Image 1: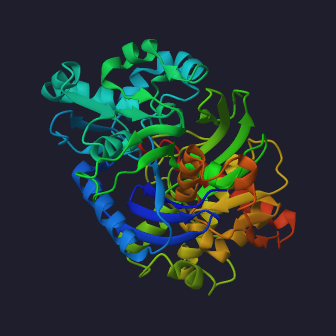
Image 2: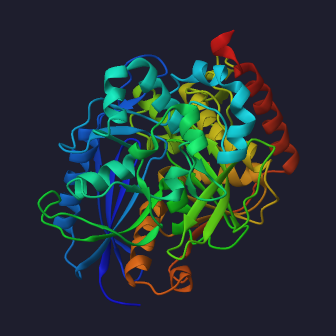
Length: 491
């Protein structure tokens, strides 16, 4: 193990987190900067790229003020996936807002393209769904022809958030991404790890507008100090947020599984060098590619709204003052008293894949209080994760991370529903930690995956505390509520 520390940037859906990670794998400094969410129409979700960039600068500036340890040796970057950004290659300004992964405006387009679904799955490992990047790009092409003309002419670059931030950090010198982001665009051949000309043609996206594909760690790019707070650091690790969390949880072996509780929740199982296909609503995805070109794969269950449901209680209904209050309020009642909340606020992801589903609350009575609704929201997160795990091979345990995993009640509800131990590590910000691990591996701060494994430790284990019969009965009631939420937007 060499000396030094790594700067990690986690560009999430609601904000930027900057971390400094020591050579011992400890988070020694942290800063977070939120940026605005834009909802111009029902079902539309957008971000302003410049606000993402300014939040990145602010978060990094703050974390550097707080950090006093050894020199930084590398930068690792992780990001919300599927969100698409356009920017001018010369000025680095963006002609329009980014269309966020949660955005559902392309649902009708996906229905029109249904005849191609089988081929899309075969090539990309994904489904035709508004979730993925290429459908958003097709929407821009159809609705904003003047903007798209500049994409086709080569003036505008197209990428995910990682590509955009690398371009800003390097003054436009590098236009790159990695397989963990590229495989979420519907434009990458998941078997080869390269852009698919067939898919580019299908969605009308010019191949030349897309980033160069680089390994997940190694000599990827260097920040320009004129653009990036006087820092000249090797960008030595890049990964989409969920693959970064898998790496940060040191799930390096086939069968290792984790669940990240963030805005949405994402269950990933490492399948090694084998590309496994699922008939049960899971996605076949690239986990990472080493500098020698070896691809590691995963199966993924993507749940669109989990932590965002708690945010909705806070911001939309204003029944809680902060997300942190949810556990205490929910614990004031022993159960939800039959109230079930299906948080299909942007449709349903895995394993149902219904963009027309909508949020549904059933079981209300005159005795229902906000505590019952808050508890039903936490229960919904546990049910949604069980929905995904029901389609996967039996687990012996589940590693959890993300902001909501700090909620003890949620972790207990999760263990009760899946019937196996839920393991919470010392550091639950494993998305940023994974980016740091990749960058440290890319610069020799850590010499091997075994060194990284030694940094992982369990902070608390949650064991099932209710009879399996009760958990199963609650789950059957949840499943009935899910059916009532299906296809609501087209009813």
